[in-house]
Length: 354
Ligand code: NAP
Ligand code: ZN
Image (cartoon, rainbow, N blue to C red; front, side, top):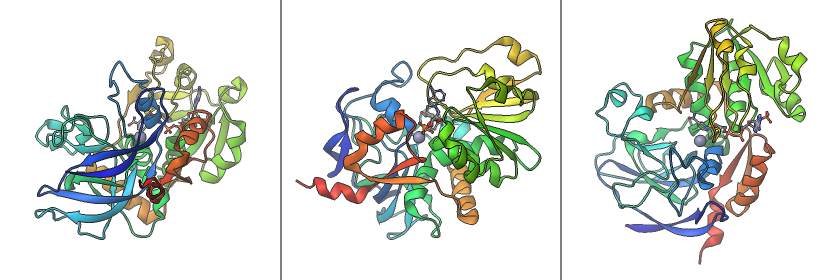
């Protein structure tokens, strides 16, 4: 065991502050990564503030961060996937049981014994796992992704969660040319959803509550932008969508979007508002519509997504910040005031050296 510098929150109301955390010595299949950038996902904010307490209570201190990109510094004796010096990515998962039905199918994200990157029981060191707002991390090679060398790294970090969480449900729903796709909420997830839907050849419509995001939405790949608080703009699209991806992090009316689906259309929820969302039965039965949910993506699909991004030159649009600005960034994220993902430059942790 050795220590690493990190940023941690001590309670739901405490700001994140400099801390020292333990990291394990390498086991045979472990990879040690020096973290270069870590994205700020809205899930970090939900969990730091214990907003998902009924399902995933937060254990303090918490070190968030599951959009990790860095460089391999050491590998265990049995590691075959990476060598020191390679670029590497780590997302929301660091371990699973590898034996359940989901793991066997490459859907580790649904493993009942999944270990999340932060706030999950740590079977090596006890306590809970600590995430990417830190200088290093040690992860089993199975959960370490290869990163294409042609992409700008600050914008690669968010692919590890925002990227796969939007790529996976659209692949699962067979989004291709000829499909009409809606993306609700132009935040970290939403802006990646727009990029992927466009890259898959779909007709893309963004629903936003922020009039100031209209031009950006078009630049990111949307064919049309709808201000979701304008009923006339919404009504024009009634019954026309094959698929809508809902990335909203707070309470909102999903029936307004169900009504926009065509017969047999699907609304897939990836946003996780702390309170349940109300569903109007009529909005579903009227055209045999479906609601579904989706949780990140498996490791094989995450690698497929990264390779797709390398080939199509896709990264997140990021605002790079030093770790010392993380609390300010959380405040701005809650006001939807970021274009479109914060990416923490982890070299800034150096300033915290005692
Ligand atoms: P984000 O960057 O804050 O984006 C959320 C967007 O939702 C905002 O930019 C805003 O878009 C819209 N929004 C916010 N408050 C709203 C309100 N009261 N009413 C209507 N729209 C509102 O967050 P994110 O990082 O993309 O994450 C989004 C959600 O997905 C979070 O709940 C997060 O925990 C969850 N998540 C789920 C998974 C998964 O695997 N399922 C993975 C990662 C994250 P406009 O300004 O355009 O309206
Ligand atoms: Zn996330």
